[in-house]
Image (tube, rainbow, N blue to C red):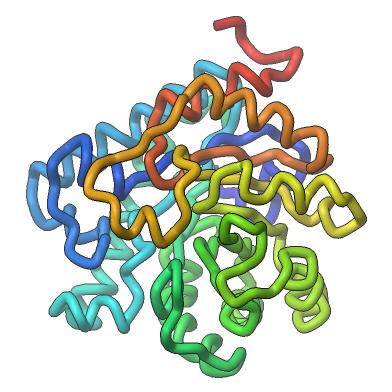
Length: 318
């Protein structure tokens, strides 16, 4: 089924996203990812098998808990700038996008149920570093840059696109405008530092409100990712209408800062049970929270505990 014109999470359906794909591939599967580019794993059968195993695990988890599944493409690092650094030309990059969408469409056909709708989500990453950007784009520059990936996702059958780990507002605005131009739903997911502010220093509320003002509130919703719940809970506790625009959270397992994670040589996967319980607390501050997954350091265990802790009355017993 295709959901572009009626995303189930916008109608209140509880959805799961996956966890930390890149950290799972590197630390659990022992697969080298140059520049943290998960799509490079698709160049070997070992990598193809690992990603397939990983995604099928989340598909089964979603069905088990009567939740939908947002199926992310492994393309966070598959934009032109990063591809060029990896020696991947435009034609090869386009084929990567075609193949990953076709794979997810097939997986959806194999696992989706009426109670668990599956959504194919084209993932876009930042043009610069996802923790400390060194190159800042204007909104118009970002729109032009990200138009390539956004256009491919719209053309090749993705239901939506999500810009993950956004560090500053102008790039987010450009991505929303690029998605508007091809009429595909778009989600903006900001990351925050341990003080709950974007790496740019801007407050989360201010960032969300600025994107909405500049784009006519046309982003489907906003998310927070790549930060531990402790890093942004106090910001959400302040409340306000703006919190209704946040419909998704994909948190890190670790309480370490971005700088500390960058230097870490071992995986900090935290406490999966506590991770779930912290998300139950977040539901008190995010009235429209319908999408929950994980980011760095998380895997199926963490997301399962989130499902258990935030279980709806109609969900299957575990």
